[in-house]
Image (cartoon, rainbow, N blue to C red; front, side):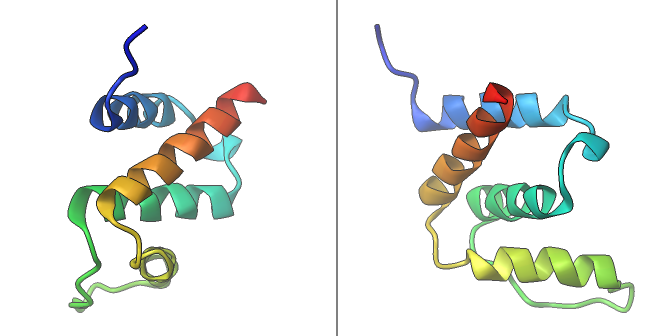
Length: 89
């Protein structure tokens, strides 16, 4: 059996996550998934704030900042791990 590469596994996990409802996930899990996704796809956060900055954005920004030390590949692995844990429940 050939193991799937990281990008393929990440895209599969993103697809699974997109089918989950927000109501089915605790907010802390939603924030962690958001942060790992952003770090994996955009890299380290750029702190340019706009005038439309809201409290919800502050929580999301904080979650992303907390994991900004991870490489995109590490963030992908963490994202995949969370999704795999959720689907095993």
